[in-house]
Image (cartoon, rainbow, N blue to C red; front, side, top):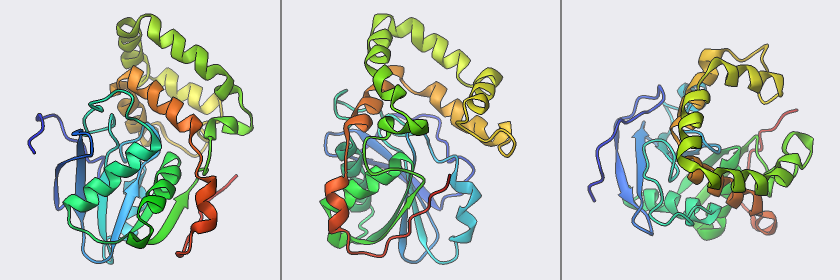
Length: 248
């Protein structure tokens, strides 16, 4: 299928080829590949479009075919055709749509933050196609209940959803202007979202720029779906090599 042309970003990672595929509901999903060997699929965190991967990807370029892709409503991919089709299950179906499009039968799935839930959900959908799992700094269920060690974000979510619905166009303009600002970086450091002593602004700026480009209503809908998702029932079924990366 042909999707509308747009500014494409690979966030510093060279790709041998890239394109779009049509997912289960017709939403256009962007993908990019580089390298040769066993397939390693990189799944982003919430509101990310790959800004973390250039820091680690060079270690794997010689031994793997790396598949990058962007979630619906993220990066180069289209917003969902159905505004409600933003569940973790929808994202996992998008992943398999990419692999089917590329005619790749099996893969190693690496997921960062929300990507942990995505790769677990993808495993449940097609366990025989998954060679191994690499969950990185994420949880398997309802992350807003334990975000920063408490459930305050979970409790605030209904109010956030209602607030965004009052004046979406005006709030979108404010969101787009303020999110990539120095103030957002300072707030992220002050709130311990990042370690301000170790993370430079130029490291974090691509994330802020991408968040600013997202549709605010889609952002909140995905956050709501993420908050309700649990892959706890999948854990006992995992029978492939799994490398868990986590830290305080």
